[in-house]
Length: 454
Image (tube, rainbow, N blue to C red):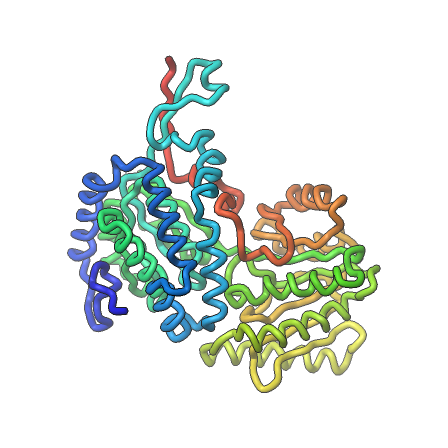
């Protein structure tokens, strides 16, 4: 399948972007929005977006086929990892999920279309309508595709023209997704632009930011600060900085077949997108007291990751990433040799495909990712939170495997501690469409409200 040159990301590698090209693209997007998007009904947008998503779930869809054929070479993810990630992402873009999102965010799925009143609003003689920015700019991080694809979906749903600036070498999947939208609805696709260049190009970024009403960005805290400094005061800025995640397994659940299922779910979270997203676990904390001890849990997880490598391989890594894993492994080989009662490790043979390190020390440890996971023993939830205190305020997701009758109590404790998302282990990298990223509204940060008091 040959993609036409609809977007700046379609230009050949030797093409040079200029500030004039960027400024003209921004003006074109605004004009196209006025003609083709501003007056569209929410229901028609949901219908188009859910149809595009359903297409991506079909084996014979040409855009899916292209992503799976060329994706391993372009992204570093294996075909199997890409397939599972795409299925999880597009599987949640359904009509029902879109309606649930709009009701959650605005109280009424029609709030983007017209003045409406909830039951409370009727009692107080008040109606309201929601307005989105005319022109959004998204600065994508590039480690995994989901945040960028979600930004595109949310921007179209709220009727904003959008310019998606990808990190150098990371526009492959956003570009194909944009083409699938263009094929489904050319007028809708004309309100979207995708480009890529290396960050720090002040001339291009000044041209891009000049007309933006809202800028969203995902990246390091330092990168977000640099972007914020370039924006006019009037421009709304939504930055999603560095976050980490971890899991917690209660000893009470580690019995019989339940233990095997929990190990498999932990492996799901480690394997998904090669553990590269902010929702991926760095550490799985395991409580003793079950049939399976924390050390045995680590060994079973190693066996499961070895099995997954056969059916869902990690893929090749850049030399520097592989070297970082090899160096980290060497450290734990030495520690395990000298203190086997407190440190053990398991790893793939003749490759860096996966690594499991068990430690009795509960202090949170940053993983080097790419399926490198720590398993740590903790006496209870309090001990775990003490061990993770250094990252308090920087935690995105905690995946839990705990008794059902204690789940709400544990989730409340985690919420009070500062976790913004608690989910079942195995679903850490697969949040629902209604997920509040970093504890903030999914759509609410993008819009403004107008109240009409009757």
